[in-house]
Amino acid sequence: MTKKQRREAGARRQRRRPPPLLQARDECSSVSCTTFNILAPIYKRMDSENCRESQNRANWFSRNEKIIDRLLAGRSSIICLQEVWLGNDELVNMYEKRLGDANYTLFKLARTNNRGDGLLTAVHRKYFHVLNHRELLFNDFGDRVAQLLHVESAMPYLQNRSSSCVQQQSLIVNTHLVFPHDHSLSIVRLKQVYKILQYIQAYQEEHKLSPMPIILCGDWNGSKRGQVYKFLCSQGFVSSYDTAHQYSDSEEDAHKWVSHRNHRGNICGVDFIWLLNPDKCRKPLKTSWNEAVFGIIKYLLLQVASLSEENAFALLRADSPDDHITYSSFCQALCQLGMVHPDRVSSEEIKDLWSEADHDGDGFVDYKEFQRCIWSPKCDNQEEEDDTEIDITDGSLVTLEPNDEAFGFTVKEAVLFPPEVEKGMWPENYSLSDHAPLTVVFSPVRMPCSPRTPRTP
Image 1 (cartoon, one colour):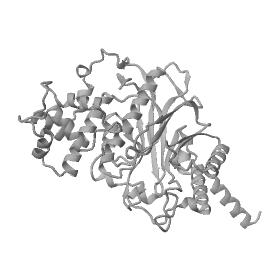
Image 2 (cartoon, rainbow, N blue to C red; image 1 turned 180 degrees about the vertical axis):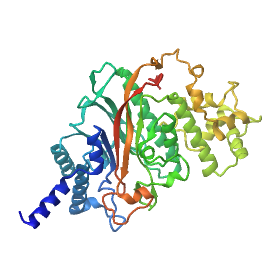
Image 3 (tube, rainbow, N blue to C red; image 1 turned 60 degrees about the vertical axis):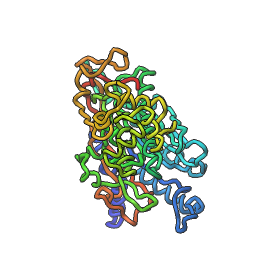
Image 4 (cartoon, rainbow, N blue to C red; image 1 turned 90 degrees about the horizontal axis):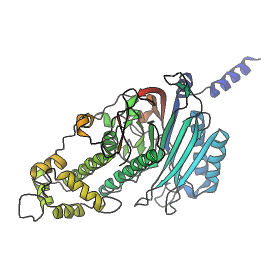
């Protein structure tokens, strides 16, 4: 063999060598997950405002070939894609053929009302068997949808205390929340996440599932500063990327990374892979929802309407002759803020909010109650960990013995591509999408169960 032939053979071996993420995964029997909004050609703007990439087959075909090349090189155990142009058979066939040939099982879900794009989740058969698959249609303003996959590890790589082999089960969600064209859609986006968590809880109870990790993937169209992020954190979820890089929820760390440059030219971090392990104590889902809605009410009053604390109270009090908020004036204010709608806050949910705000149950909300719930809420997570604070007599929570164990995941590594986005910058020469793919490597681990796991909303 000549020197030239040896160099060419070495180059071929180098190209075949798996990327660092895959090497780490194989060495520790870990699994990986990738989420990527691939920007549907029907939305990708070309040189002029009225021209879309979908009008030029050569462009969209080439770009999607490169996207698939990258996905196959990464060989993630689970791939969650958003904005897949499901209305184009040629593009769909391209993904089905190439990912199918690479040993992936594919699940597709189009957005409602023939929007043209949708979700695609691919599960590598080497790592997982799909036990069940559900489709969630929000049927709301944005025609958004979500996929729920109940998966089981293909290989029994963990052992319980009796030294018998087990196959770990997990719940995987892929979704794409509504884009915040204006501030009024913040509540719509929050409602979509609320529906997802309600659906997961209903599925867990229907199938009487044991505690297992839940992974939420997708384009959340909101940053770490928004109520969706706070809502999921209050339910025990952690952002895998921030966990891997030891970033906090501080304002400083909120700008450390980005994953999207939108059509307005703004860059922000909106793509997340959320992890909830079975050892997490969780407050009731409805409590988290109420807290998040009150947070949006404050945002609308303070940031949008530019009201001071006193003027915000006056707006909610309306023309009440006494110095307190009535149920009627509360409903009227929510209507003024654009929050009353089945896609936003329903009449039943308004009643729940009112019950939460009217702490003493006298039928009115005074200034102190307004401060406690809306303006300056004191969220003490320790209350949720105190047995005396949670009523379990209604059977809505399943109690577990202290020695009960389940299997969860630790976040081993998380990477965004291209590397510049991990430093909060968007490279001009990046052309795969207007989003950056996020890949997270998880390692399975045995852990104690939370003594209380919510089962119903």
